[in-house]
Structures are given as structure tokens and as C-alpha cells.
Image (cartoon, helix red, strand yellow):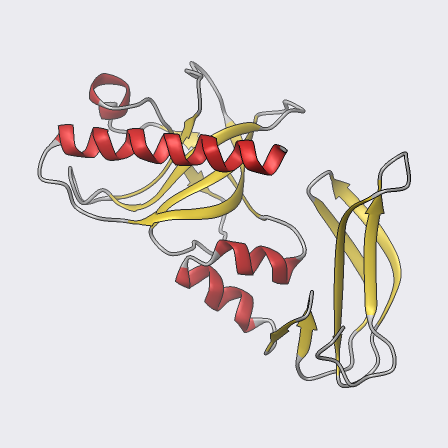
Length: 212
């Protein structure tokens, strides 16, 4: 990597059947790094086994000052940077719990998630993909994480699956792709609904661009 003064850096890439590069990931620091093996977990996640000998490193040519930088980016809502540092999208798993019921009645239907002990990023609205129960496919979604400032002020982790109404689901995997906006209080439900409509529009546009 450009920021590294070491003689050895680590580089991973994926090739499609035609031999074209689909994605690439690299890291390195002032000393020598290496990767001995790569174990794919799913299409969005892999584990690299190797050695890291530097106190700071560069991931995809961006200087990172240690692992706490990933946590800091999550707390800042900078999911794109956190994903670059991780080499994959930040994934949160949880179970579906009972919610207010307000979304389905007056706004947009959501799945209410109780996460399984993950670091929760900054409060706000995110665009992502979700996997329901044991389904193989991932569903485009808008995700709200934070206190419901416009209603009961309680903390919630809510997922609106685009263009679908999910009647029943027990577990969920949430793949966060990007940050849309900060959490804020709305004076009326109509104002909140209009903003959610815009969130959905922006999420659909971003996911469409990613699929190009």
C-alpha cells in the first residue's frame, strides 16, 4: 500500500469467472504483514489468517491508527469508512421482537430488532441489506437505529424492508452499507412520514447504483 514503508503488505482480491476483478482489499504498515489463508463465511464476509506487525496500518491506502478507529467510525456513523477498515459490511444479528405497531398503522411497516450484543453505531437512518431467518437472499432495506424522539422516546432498532410487508420472522441479519441521516425529532407524524418516504427514495437510489 502507498502509506506503508514495509517490504511486505497483504492483498486479497476476488475474480469473476472471466478473470475480471470484482473487489480488492489490502492492508499494510511500517513493518511486514502477511496473509496465509482466507476462509469465506458468506458472500459478504471472510476471515483472513496471517500476521500483522505494525503499530499503525493502511487499509486500501487509507491510514488507520489501530482497531479502535473502526469503533470510532461506527460511533460517528461513518459506516462506509468502517466497512473499508473491516474489509466487509458491518453486520448485526438479532431476534425480532414486538414493537409499537405504529409503523404498520400510520407510517411504514418495520421489523423491530433486539441485537445480539453488537456495538451499535451512531443513532440515525442507514441503508442496508437484511437476511430473514434462514433465507439465502438479501433484501434491500432502510434501517433506523436510535431513540424514537417523535413518539415514545425509547430506543429502537427498526428495519423497513423495501417493497415488502413481512408478516412473520424470528431472526435477522442486518448488513449496514451507508449512513443516510442523523436521528431527529419531528413535530407531527405527517412530517415524519414524508421524511421516511425520502429515506426510502434515497436508499433505493443508492442500492440501485451499487448494483450497476
